[in-house]
Image (cartoon, rainbow over all chains, first blue to last red):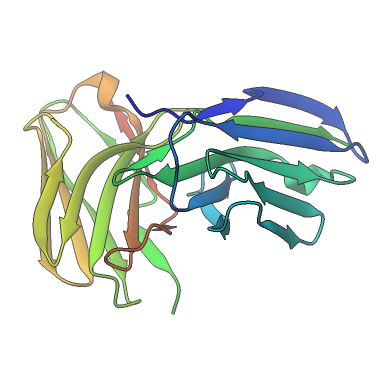
Length: 108
Length: 112
């Protein structure tokens, strides 16, 4: 069974703190996506990483793809209440699979 | 236009009702998807359409019946649902062969 394991599953922090979310697998992915989903809305695509070792930045968000293309991380600097939501990673190994998600709450 | 639209936004139906969910995209994507999502859980794939043909059915009960009338539209017909079918139903599209999915806002379904 191909699995994407996300950690942590839940995270509650204060505004201004930094955090990292991890997405790990024993499978190799040709690409990996990160989505953010706000309550009552659909997931919104944040980034796609394709190349092993790749680092992409989106304002205060930094995404990294592992050298072996089996894992990825999302780092948020100086979190804000607007970052609150469910963060999902997804990858394909011929079939698209999602991680279990990380619920992030940023308190003002 | 990079938007996937879904109607209705909310739906409450009884177990004997028949209703339909609608999804539309105008990005020229030839793959469209239906997902079911429970609170704080990842989306669960239900159906995939490729070039308006059903290509994947993830063993979904027959009380859910998908339909793809054309390359821009996707419907999900609902009949004799159970309370445990209450969830957020998401539609998504992607370029064929691509893995980036564009999701609609979802339909919040409550079965009473």
